[in-house]
Amino acid sequence: MRDETSTAIRLDAVRRTLGKSDFDFDFSFDTGKITVIVGPSGSGKSTLLNLVSGFEQPDMGRIEITGQDVTDLAPAERPVSLVFQDNTLFAHLDRFTNIGLGVHPGLRLTPGDRKAISDALVRVGLAGYERRLPGSLSGGERQRAAFARALVRRRPILLLDE
Image (cartoon, rainbow, N blue to C red):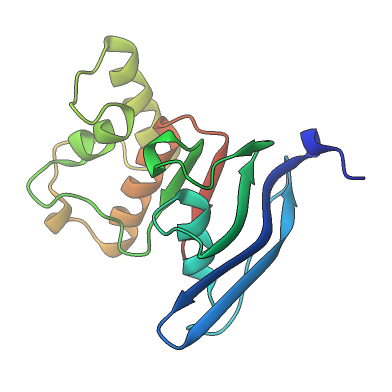
């Protein structure tokens, strides 16, 4: 029997049907490991991440994160941060504010939160441009800003979609 404390994510007989495609998942990811999922377009990579993060619900099966059944939990209730392919930055908000949404959706930020945001910007190489809008950023800079937002959420599971 597998030690549940070493399992970060478990998908138990999970199925999701999208259109004419059935996606079946039955495996686990170990804690402390970096796991890469590769496959052709349409093979279910993004579907897997959306299931784990709660943006899609399985048609059947069970999803556990760190031993807790999260199958029916909303995305905000799961211990997961997801960086989407399209970055999901708000065009009318500067980089600092976009990252601040990861800390508190209402942007009620403490001085400690502001420091965490500044530290995340340094970690991803974007310090000094906190007030720039997403439209003035390169694609790579937008991706790094989205990554910084995921970092400030302080969740034990970080999912990156391309």
